[in-house]
Length: 157
Image 1 (tube, rainbow, N blue to C red):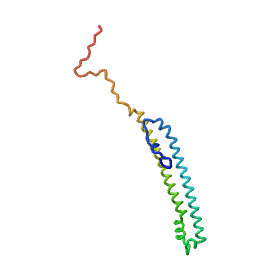
Image 2 (spheres, one colour):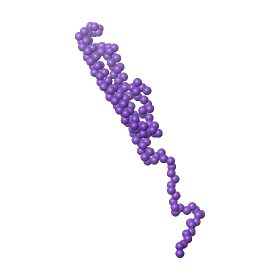
Image 3 (cartoon, rainbow, N blue to C red):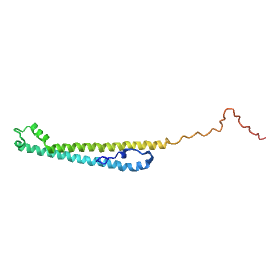
Image 4 (cartoon, rainbow, N blue to C red):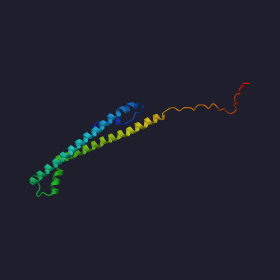
């Protein structure tokens, strides 16, 4: 199990438990879609926090460039200070991690869509008797094996 709660068995199909698979499927789709939505919200919050961190640091550098070892404040120099800041780097790592988690949650939802298609196909195969045992055809009453003479009928006179 991953730290997100993604479990591989949620994406496999047990053709001997089709009813249970169909009953569990909607709640699994909801779980992973909700997980993706929550991660998306956290990602947007992290991006907003990162923007605020960058803006605050930019203002601080502009007000007091000497404390950052800058002789003059060009945009490139300010951006270099921002990129090298530990808090900014931590924020960027958090954003990268959340993007990865979101991608995994979306992949889980996509895998459940594939599972739904597989379940539908298996049910269709069952409906068409794909898994049934072979049946022998009914014998033709008019068929006579070679060399066997037809029965003589008694005439009713």
